[in-house]
Image (cartoon, rainbow, N blue to C red):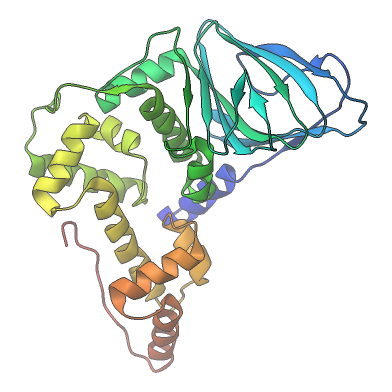
Amino acid sequence: MDGDDRMTDRVEEARDRPTVGLRADDGVAYVMALPGVTGELVRTGGSDRTTDITLDHFGDKSVAHVDIGFPIAGEATADDDVLIAVSMLQTPPGGMWDGVELERGSTFVYGPGSSQVARDPIGLRFALATFRWEDIEAGAAVLGRRPPTAGHRAVYRPDRASLFTRLFEEHTRVEPAEDAADRLLEAVVELVSDPGETTTGARGWTSQQIVCECLEHLERTATWRPPVLTLCRAVGVSERRLQQAFSDVTGLGVASYLRHRALQATRLALSGPAADRVTDVAADHGFAHAGRFAADYHSTYGELPSVTVRRARSESDRGEVTHERLVPGD
């Protein structure tokens, strides 16, 4: 099986989306599909409508999208080693969560042993995930950040990007499952932790060595847009040291450089005589938003991706071959 086949299989795995229908019965288990959470969902209105929970599985991480179809009172408690993160996606007027007036994009975080009690109005929509505390600590260590205390409980207003809205608008829909899991964990770690004080990497490598090792990892895994957490773990340096290395060598930050390389790899794939649909090739290289990808591609190469495909097919029909290669560091 070649790299493209492996990527296709991993993308299909990441798109697995079973749905759970939660009945509006008094005392029904609350967010029952997520491990590490206990509690109850109690109906306070006379509606027979359901509350729907849609589960997204990404490797060993899951996110529940919850649509409240009736007024409820609910309580959830984190187990000893679980952190709960709730990000508001849709908030009806006057909505309250745990006594706090809601704004779309607010994220509520509850550390191990803490509880949230909410009286939620009809029409509330939120995304919820739980993370083992040891994963938070390990992720913070890899990124070179200081983890929060175990009793962490905080509200992050919409001026911090809505956690799950941002994630699901960007990469997770088209990523390999393990990369999507790392991106979820990375976002939560960055939300609840503080930057570390050191910029040195554990290995003491030069910036050139760090960048070369990253590129070799990307070649091996056949992906050009992994989470920063994945790269830090693979190379063995902190996020700050990784950013410094890419800036030293390429003049760009990690995300900007990887986006540039992903565009290069996409152009190479589209230039082949047997190129798949543009949207499929873009998705395989980490571009989830087709319109945004087309605009970036046109800005970089002066033509739309569809033009590249048509030219490649025309050259193939005439027996011509265009040779391009992707060289690390270009």
